Image (cartoon, rainbow, N blue to C red; front, side, top):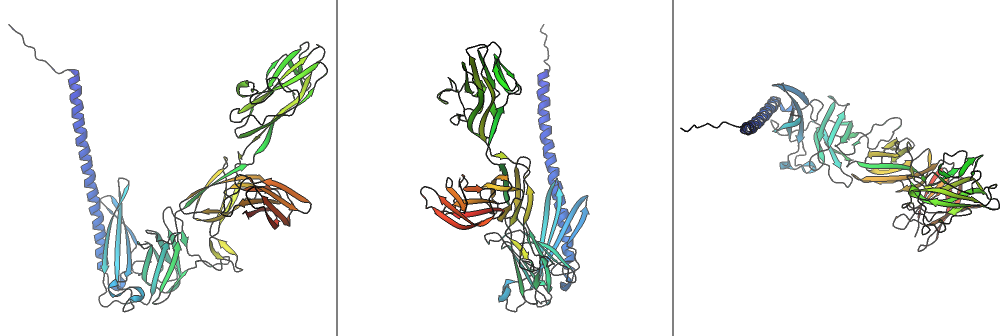
Length: 568
């Protein structure tokens, strides 16, 4: 007799089945979630549409003459902004009403009947937020007068927004305020594709204040006349009956300027006067006593090596100096060691293997790239146990820099003005007072302009590029300044060729009676003369091979002065 066993499901089968069911359920859940979201969006949009339609119907219920907004042009009783809550959703409604000049009978000065307030147009923007994102519904409708178009006795306000090149700025926000009219005007609108806001029917007044802005752009505005700004530019706009008043304002993409300040390249020195052994890394048969490095008693040969010298801004090794006493029958040989205490080979520093018996020792041939640290070593010998040579001091000098110089205050002043005082002195639109951070860097975001630089606490030794800084719209500029200690009078000569390019390696001589000093220009074209006498009779002479030697007479230097010299 055969016995048949029924095979059941294994654990793997169960897990696979559960996984398949989970995938199906997750897919169904995703579809359900998406459908609910779509349904919610459709429901909220329908709510916004209903709110907009209700507002539009309300406008249609008003008489043509009263159709306008509170603080708007034309003025009326309709609120510009209102909030409605439906089904837990907040709907923000903005109503904007304006006159329209219909091209059917000509526009502007070509209008056949001279009336450019042909009809009114209402725009209703209803915005709402779903899932953290903002949505909107827009309704637009025209409203015709019951008879022939009429003028209300006002004029037309035309606001033209342009960029730095004179092209139109689309979608710029234009705020218009006039507290002198009744009712008070306070509206915000946006420029069209031509960069224009056109508002016929504006009440006659000389107090129209305009403010223009756009995200990521500079701003522009009218300015009030006060005791300081007695000649504002631009001042408030004036609307005259049956005339068009045009105000043109320029805005453009913001610019960025990164200011970096450094102290100048300087000579630094490692030195040891052998007060103790703290500056020695190895000693053999030698000792430090009484301010000298000498042989231990009874020893005929000994060595010592200093700790390593390095700098993060190292640019050149300079020299090694020593102060020694070498009695008869004794000798001292100095050696220079590189990274890790390895003796610098003779191919780099000739004679180093044998050692140097006197100083100074020039080490300018040693590459700072290959050898980022150096140390001084000495071998002391004597032929008698009673006499020892000694070293009372040694030093190693090098040049390093520029070093970041932090917390430097500075002022940038743009050349654009917003008016003038009663005496005609300009009042500048943009004045930025700031300071570099601890690391010597400060970023500035500002509008396109040409900015002069003032540093109250330092002399400018070098600058790349040389101020003033001309910032183009939407561009980034990196400015590097090498700063020195403030002196009473200093002159920086900035040398360029006939196309404005900085000239490096030119010899600049500054001279007057009883004084003459020569300085080469840096890679950025600057030659700095610090701590000089205040005078207006300096002569600057510039010479370089391939150029015509040129004299610049009657140069004045008072305070921190920069002289720009074009060198043919």
